[in-house]
Amino acid sequence: MYDTPDLAVVDDDPPPVRRRALRTIRAGFIQLLDCALLVTAREKGFAHEEGIDLQLAREASWANIRDRITVGHLDCAHMLAGIPIASGLGLGNPVARMIAPMALGMNGNAITVSLPLFERMAAAGARGDSAPMAMARALRTVIDANREAGGDPLTFGMVYPFSCHNYELRYWLAAARIHPDRDLRLVVIPPPLMVDYMRGGFIDGFCVGAPWNSIAVDEGLGRIVVTVPDLWRMSPEKVLGVRADWAGDNPDLLDSLIRALAKAARWADDPANRDELAGLLADRGYVGASAALLRPLLSGDIRLSPDGDMRRDGNFILFERCAATFPWISHALWIYSQMVRWGQITASPEAEAAAAATYRPDIYRRALAGTGITLPGASNKLEGSLQAPEPAGSNTGKLVLGPDAFFDGGVFDPDRLEDYIAGFPIHSRAGG
Image (cartoon, rainbow, N blue to C red; front, top):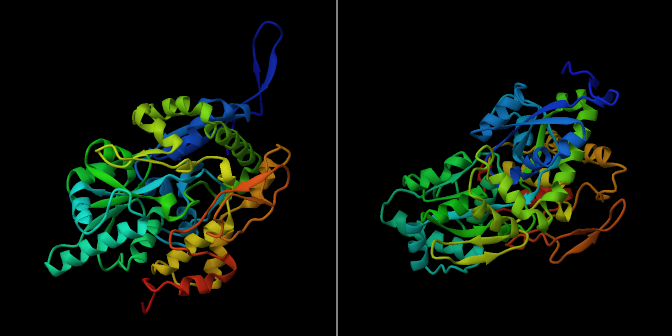
């Protein structure tokens, strides 16, 4: 695709050194904590080590990311896990086949409500340390009272219709018998604008990735009521998204990028590097929030309220641990199950196969073969079945998967997809 020669001559004294020219990759990202692997790969030189000039472009919204990948303005992107699946299924835009050959981490999201709404939830029994189900039931009490008084429905923001944020928020609401398509209003808002919408009084709550929940708390606007690891201990989030044709035309370049990002993941997950990582991400060209706000989030120290209530969760965001960069096909199928549950697509064998084919663990294994990185032996797994850390089959070394329970006790078996979808009493499928 590019005219850059494979070799360049660098004039120097002593005699000329022949050095491989860097190959350019243009990557998009959004101002979120989990853009860390792309930023780290560029700023710490891991991309250069793999022969890549990694050019990063900060985008305003997930729709921008989707569109610029689709038309070739970008080669790859920090991308919501649901975008390549939805694009391949023709949901929300023309069919554009994308793949996810690597994940960029797990977890990192939270649900925040405005302080006035939390006051009403507290009057209905919610406390600062309430479990997710108790929080949701208190919200249901507020919604019921609002309806009886003839008030307008509450409005919650999420970042994209085919995002894990949307599905996590819906999963939490529905567990307390709140129907997200009937009992309140859900609207799409780009992550960097979420706090502004709450400040303006346009929304009562939102589900978004770090650091925007913490910024709302820091500005005295909202309270974090649920961290998504409380809903699903090991939730998929961002992936490396690329067009399928680009991946097919540039297999060696894609493999080099995956290796650079794998090195970045190891560096980013090392506690010794958290201060430096927070400083890198704080740059105005990247996330732009203060390092003082970002640094605790990398350790899982979460300020829940303007009053200073704190929560510690060492797995709040994962970059490498627990196979966080592996593209599990079961994650793709869980996302597909929620698309069906909420009426975004009608279930079919063809759609299921297309969703599963979006995640490409074969490319991940190809890129990292011989690097010494421990790779899972399987590409699918039961989701929500682990109550404690557990060793898993791997190619070399020791791989430990973390607890991955859903808060309602559910388990997702990708081999019983139809039964799983049919088991939800609250849904928006045809006839529901």
